[in-house]
Amino acid sequence: MGGIAPGVLELRGVGKQFTRRGEPVQALDNIDLRVERGEFVCVVGASGSGKSTLLSLIAGLSPVSTGQVRLDDRPVSGPGPDRGLVFQSGAVYPWRTVERNVAFGLELLPISRDERARRVDWYLAETGLTALRHALPRQLSGGQLQRVAIARALACEPQVLLLDEPFGALDVQTKEDMQVLLHRIWRDTARTVLLVTHDVEEAVFLSQRVVVLACDPGRIAADLPIALPSDRDLAVKRTPQFLKLRASIEDLVRAHHHRHTPAE
Amino acid sequence: MSTDTDAAAVTTGARAGWAALPRRRPPRRVPSVLAIRSPISRRARWILITLSVLVPAVAWVALSGSRTVEPRFLPSPRAVWLAGVEMARSGQLFTDGWASIQRVLWGFGLAVVVSVPLGILMGTFRAAQSLLEPVIGLLRYLPASAFIPLLILWLGLGEPSKIAILFIGTVFFNTLMTADVVRQVPKSLIDVSYTLGARRGEVLRKVVVPHSIPGMIDAMRVNAAAAWNFVVVAELIAANSGLGYRIIRVQRFAQTDRIFAILVIIGLIGLTMDLSLRLLRDWTGRWVA
Image 1: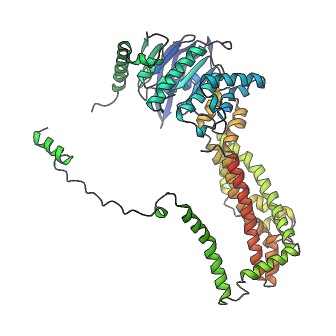
Image 2: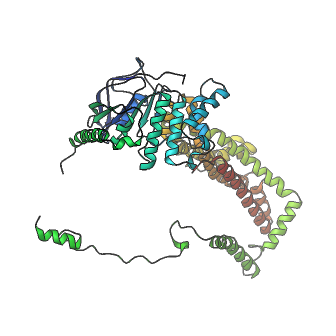
Image 3: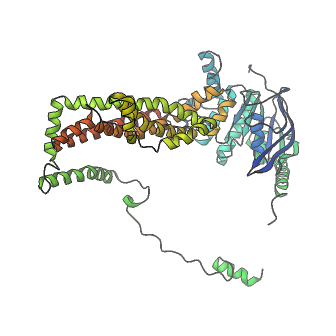
């Protein structure tokens, strides 16, 4: 595909604090992270590790307290279509049909109707939504809604695609279908992807690198390459290599989660 | 843990020394008409709908037919029908009805034109909310009918004072209700729009407003009913046309049958107004789950 090239995402000493009931809370502390062009990175951590906060900082939806977020070596401030975001809830426009949801970002750009339709058609086909193009969101299942959200974000050709627990609310079978779909989309569109999840299996299956966040304050506890073949299907989840990676990362997440929970 | 506590835990499912939790008798089964939120049969529904119209109608017929109440106080349905037909024939009913409807269209129309943008501002910008909510929250508790003498002083006896009463009576409520609807636009929809490249004005136009339209029409439905009440009140006091004025006129000649006929017409026009707004709401809100 032509279009806008994927970008390099870099976080330099990013921290976030806010006040809750007058008390300062350090949500994230000194995060250094670099996601290479076209790389797929997953951030895992227990709830409360600031995973979602991290994504909203990168998306520019809330300002960083310290440090800097850089995209292709330029600092970013505020949200923009160069960093597409997919929420766990999907946040699909309920009054727009599937195709009009996907077209939302393109409608804001000075491109012809034909050009817009051509692109919408391609992303609908890529996410398997062509038959549902005239459906309203209330008629869709959870997995279909997430596909709309992904297609809509990708249609803007973001340099980085950010996904915040995108499959967290789905049943196991649908979740695995979506993982395979997302993996294929990543290979087809060659985007830089940063996905946040608490599901270690999902992270290992999807990514080339897994970053483990520790809780309280959120900081990077480990950064591990996933040396699995880049062309994966669900069968890889049963290989000894996969299971070993999964177990060791799960142990890491657990270790950093229990450090601050009171002993039972 | 000792072995006999373990055994106790297995047999009673509780810790040693705990009395067994009492169990309540299972509740009696109730018919679906009495079960909470339970759908009722088609037949039951139609019977209830018919009863809701039929019972008051039969009571009216019985009461007026039995002559226990003087016809001067409670005319028979037939007398009311004839009075209505006569007023319709003379064209009086239409000129009065149209005069009232026109006032509602002007007064409530102006209120909508002012309150919808204000409500959108209040629901969108915290600054607008802080600036406007205290004063509007206070003003809405001043009864519009109490403004009638003042408005007659200020604006005279003509149309402007009546339109102003309708306006005052509905503009504040509609503003606050619109603001509430707008505040319910999910933050995630607004956030995601920014990440898709939308600017502030585009978010307002393409996300906040479309999401709020069915709710805003619902608010208008409630306040249109209030406007329809206010117009009759305004006409009772100072007017020379309109359904409210006509009630006062015929009262002087003790023509209760005509009063009843006018009341029926007022109800029918209100119902029509509500139904058309409901249709509009359902049409614009096809996407609501």
